[in-house]
Image (tube, rainbow, N blue to C red; front, side, top):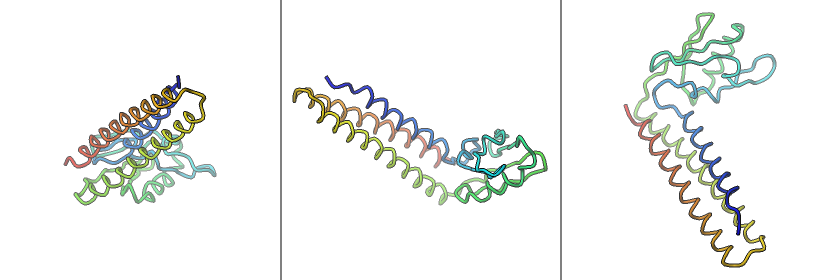
Length: 180
């Protein structure tokens, strides 16, 4: 019998990664994960924003960034402005940075959904790669032919299940993005 647990674990990891990526997609409300991809050059190296500051939500449409070292405020503001995909304009008062989240236009919402759908395709490709690797392992295994067929069917069932999970998560995110 071919053990499909490791394959299921890999596929679960793909879906979990997809869900984390969906958290980073902007929905029109403030969320600290919106700034998860922002990198700031401090002390001679690029660091993720959440490692050099505390990011909190202040109201539904405002992020508050409190740097651990106030000397980095200008660099943090510049890094947020430089990320054009966010379209944010931070303001600082010398101690903290306030990032107002502007309301999304219909056109921008559609653009964000299109970007998110690209992440759906990336996740499905990763699932297919995992399936293909598993099929190679099954063919290489010294198992009776019926056991190989059963294992392949189990993997196909798993991929259908995980594809459905990805589609469901995307549909929820799309509804959240398009909600005004």
